[in-house]
Image 1 (cartoon, rainbow, N blue to C red):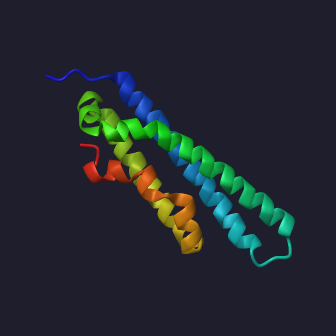
Image 2: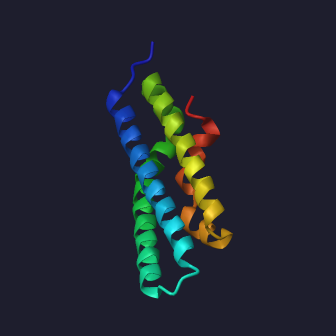
Length: 130
């Protein structure tokens, strides 16, 4: 019987929750940017764009922390508890859904530069956190 590392599972869940929260915030700002695009409010639009850039930087930081998890995924997946894997799967699915919603709001070239989906969630999806 394998011994599960509760701390590793909790740390993974913390990072994925943070990632999900940041994507949700990015979605809100994407909607706001879309609303402001047709108005005569360049100052507000600039604030939204600046906020999005800050969120993307925070997403990059979370991604850096998740990188070691991805690189060692076969080992990590065997160490975390099944309940943590189930919760992680759910969060990865939620992040993918939010990314899809952002892409429907944001022009494709902007979405590509801001989301970097493969860097943020791709490797987890490939192995589906078994």
